[in-house]
Length: 125
Image (cartoon, rainbow, N blue to C red; front, side, top):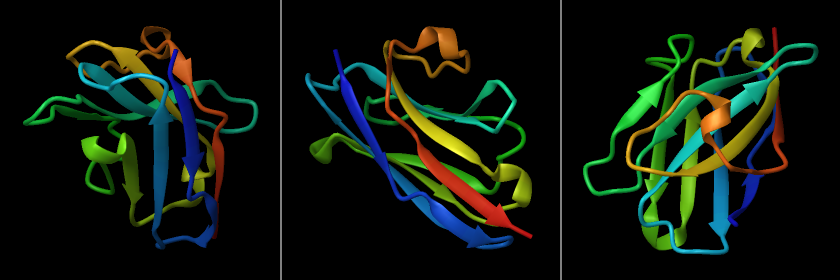
């Protein structure tokens, strides 16, 4: 099992930026895909971005965040990041980090076995 701890959430004005971090522990991350999902009140948990863990990372993004969000990882620190720029009020949600064993980033929440507790991101207009 993988333990995931998110950090970096907070309150920001529209147009601002935040960087989320997800620190992983419990086992080696070679071969693991890491993903970010988000859930707004009363809505489903939606895919945001995912990245493979191998050299020459494969990245995948939801259409709603393409060009604004960037996912990256630091293998030496077992940490994955989500840089969020040009934030909009509709980006307000709890953001969750997730892990799955495999080589191809997936966008379905059902493909991820391990989850963090989430970090709140609030974007004011």
